[in-house]
Image 1 (cartoon, rainbow, N blue to C red):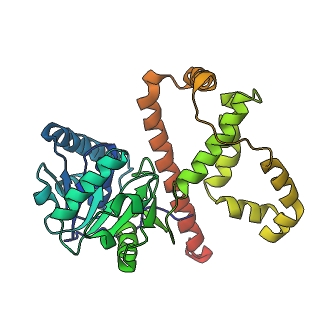
Image 2 (cartoon, rainbow, N blue to C red; image 1 turned 45 degrees about the vertical axis):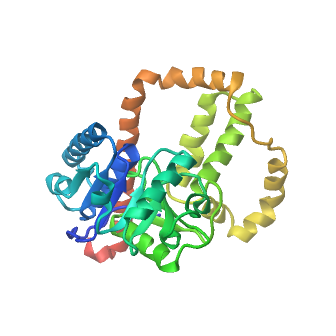
Image 3 (tube, rainbow, N blue to C red; image 1 turned 90 degrees about the vertical axis):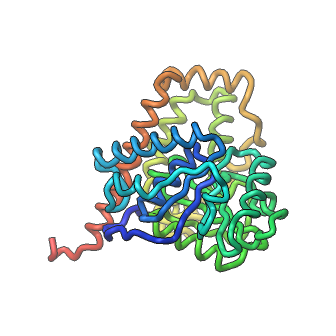
Length: 333
């Protein structure tokens, strides 16, 4: 498993990064790039929104530093000083080498914003979208600089979950894909580069497949929500914190081919019982809501998110420490 933080000192960089949209994802991106030493311009049309975003970013960076959860070697004050706010798109993207769009997940809105950015950016800048599921060709076919467009999809919360899906459109230049991956490496994220586009990318498709099967279990009264949660947190989730699904099975037998030989028929026969996808709504969704709120009430969501973030950071530190131990010769301890 790749870790998200290096022991190397963070160098201050000159290449400017522009973030379009100052919501939760935009703020996380700004913090990530600043922690990697980049100067960041955070843009939003709403001056109050971007001002609130800057206040929130400063608070988060200070809190993370105090709890030992910060990224990179720069202090919280230095990281915050690398971020500036702007309500002028031209000012924000001026001389930016990389632009990350973070507006709400509505196709027409994204297309309109991307077109505006396309007209303001330099011809050498990279324009990336944070979309979680939209195919890049459907977002960029109308752009002048469409060969410099790419999807760089973070996983929520980006500051604690390092994977970034790098998805090119059919017309994205190869060097744009390579440079985007290089930038993600530089800020401690873990890029996963796709050969071609697909709806939902990898994270979404796997996540939605799990949701579909789990929803079916509840709808058919096979078990309750808590049972599904425990099956993940005390079962599959413990595997998947360290290995992907293929390596899990590779280890469960004498290699993957042996696994397919011994259990392939069983896997296939169970898969044949899976139901077609349904929208999660109606009585089943209401039942799930009631059960979920028994152990995670709505008024405790922020508290639970903080707990989640702290555990994700702790897991990342654990994996990093284990990797460091494995890389250190036993005689050097």
